[in-house]
Image: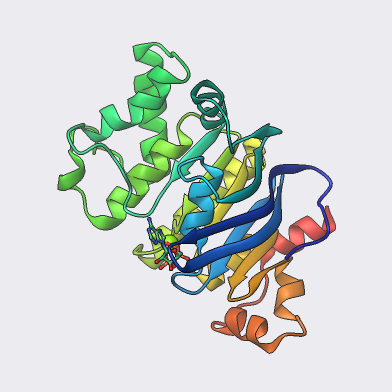
Length: 262
Ligand SMILES: Nc1ncnc2c1ncn2[C@@H]1O[C@H](COP(=O)(O)OP(=O)(O)OP(=O)(O)O)[C@@H](O)[C@H]1O
Ligand SMILES: [Mg+2]
């Protein structure tokens, strides 16, 4: 658990408990995600990363505990309050979750029409820019089933980012992408964090990009979660934590050091 509260939490979980039958996933989880920061959720398969993102997005209710997003309580919120909260969130989940019957263009247009009530010429321009940003120029008219796995992932990320949400929840943005595309998506995420101050909460199994990007890590393990900066966890007293991060032994990169000098 992370007992030390951060100065300006954008997302806050307190005493969160959740079990699926006899599988206890969270047993009193406390954690904060700082406004404007990049936090990466780590942990073995089945440790609860996707579940944590779904809880924050209000797609799943905990058995007990509090979850606040931008100061608004998610648990027990009305349908209307939840919609307000969701308008602050961009969400990209495993599997992409694009609407199958709609083209890439129509999938991306939805949040702009519904949330931002933008006009069609502006929508078209925004979609063109967003698709270029994820390297999917020219795919506007394709249906999700006509895209490769990595393309679906990038289209889903484009949809999550297109309304420029305050907070991006992103489940494994790098899995299934080739190394060049990993770098491109990494650069895009850093850019929206820097230029828009977007809070990023990502889950990842990709240790090198995690160490390059993250301001803070939350490592989910049996028996609880450990939070800290990449440097803190790389030098943690618990060997299991060091080993988890040492898998690729990449040095904490430019992003972390740039922040420590700012
Ligand atoms: N809807 C559900 N019903 C029952 N059990 C579930 C459900 N969703 C998740 N679980 C269980 O909760 C645990 C956490 O699952 P979760 O998908 O959050 O793991 P994860 O850390 O995202 O794993 P991965 O790295 O493989 O994506 C697992 O034991 C999983 O079986
Ligand atoms: Mg998962």
